[in-house]
Amino acid sequence: MTDVLIVGSGPTGLTLACELASGGATVRVLEARSGPHRESRGKGLTPDSLKVLAGLGAAEGLEAIGTRGVVLRKYFDGAHVNDTPSGGEGILIGQWQVEEALRRRLADLGVTVEYEARVTEITQDGAGVTASLADGRSVRAGYAAGCDGGHSSVRRLLGIPFEGRTEQTETMVLGDVRAPGLSRAYWHQWFTSEGGGILLCPMPGTDSFQLQASPELSENGEVLPPSLESFQRLFDRHARVPGIRLADPTWLSAWRVNIRMAGRIREGRIFLAGDAAHVHPIAGGLGMNTGIQDAAALGRALLGALAGPATEGVLDAYEAERLPAAARVLADTAARHERVRVAIREPGRGTEAGMG
Ligand SMILES: Cc1cc2nc3c(=O)[nH]c(=O)nc-3n(C[C@H](O)[C@H](O)[C@H](O)COP(=O)(O)OP(=O)(O)OC[C@H]3O[C@@H](n4cnc5c(N)ncnc54)[C@H](O)[C@@H]3O)c2cc1C
Image 1 (cartoon, rainbow, N blue to C red):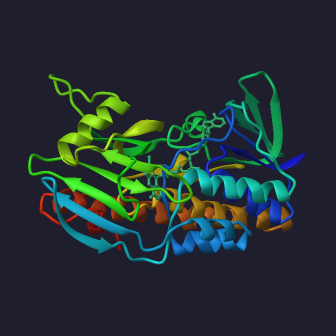
Image 2: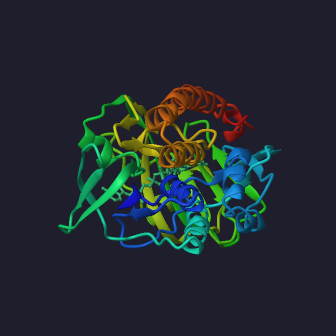
């Protein structure tokens, strides 16, 4: 029987899979998608995450591609106000590149992600866990980890509440686009006195920028879905740089502020980690990083349980360590988000208000 079944192959599930496989455990990674994505999403690795990835042998390539000390260029009402180094010891890198590096390391360890494998049911007994898949197959393992993101099926199937709040009004559109003619030396951050703004961050190892913007609203105040045309209108309204035409969108998305965490992250032989366990504002860039730390802690706990007789204490240690950590990250990122929201009304301030 497989030791651990991992549901979801985002940064959390892949880090956990590498931790377990390098410790000698057998794992299967089930992923609902049909294949890997190329979305920039979480675009920063902290020194703590780099340490975990280095321990797994997955950091070297990322450090070679990632950029350090990106300069934030701030504009207000179209005028350049100042430049601020982002500081910190982490690197700027796209989430898809982090996932690619982890998948490569996992392949070296003899494990490949199983795509088109959506888990629809999960049950457990004294000896193990059984997951049923949408295509009718079932998989048996000693333990399971729900690393299946903010809309986690595993969390829902276990009936674990996801407590907190969703801000109805605070939304953002995002995507990956090219912007020929725009300098790639800066993370451009345009804000306007009318409110709102647009940010374009040059993503390393690509010729695209990650775009984040306050969305266009319809006449009755509804958020308009993201599209290249809408991105261009937002760019023209906030950046006011004639001649720049956004192009080739490879990812279009919308995002709402959610501050929620699971009531518990262990149910017998089944665990939750990453966004499945907690979601919070992106200010400070801690989402992917917190998931990587969850995965490292869960990997240690599961390897300990698989190795020795003191199973319960070792497994309880995961929840005892990571549930309070999640609560701290929720409070911290909510405060960072508020700092940025207030700061950007002032010319020359930007996302640095949410860092550190
Ligand atoms: C614009 C933006 C910027 C961000 N910036 C940062 C940042 O700078 N730094 C940072 O740390 N974080 C950032 N984040 C957050 C980061 O993207 C998430 O926290 C991260 O993706 C969480 O990883 P995860 O592996 O827990 O979940 P996910 O990445 O959501 O992965 C979950 C996986 O599970 C799969 N899945 C779901 N249901 C099932 C099922 N039933 N069966 C099988 N598979 C399933 C999904 O297809 C998915 O692949 C940002 C996010 C956004 C949108």
